[in-house]
Image 1: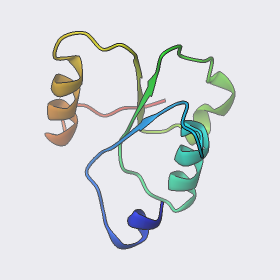
Image 2: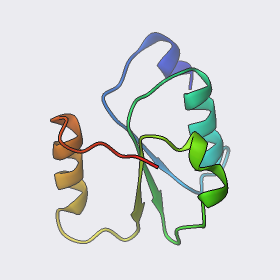
Image 3: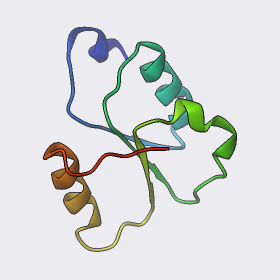
Length: 87
């Protein structure tokens, strides 16, 4: 979060479950700063997130484990502007 105060990023990749701050809390803090950067959210078991979709704009969900080049392809499409993650 602190890095985003002084830097801009083309893409943010985070996990749903993390030791100090969960992925949803992280996304909420990123979005609270009016940061529209695309976010890839990873989870071993995708939760039902329908109740907070308004805070999940421009977030793309990935279920672990990823197979093949799915992540690489999604990153390339996102950075080229051809993939826009939405609710």
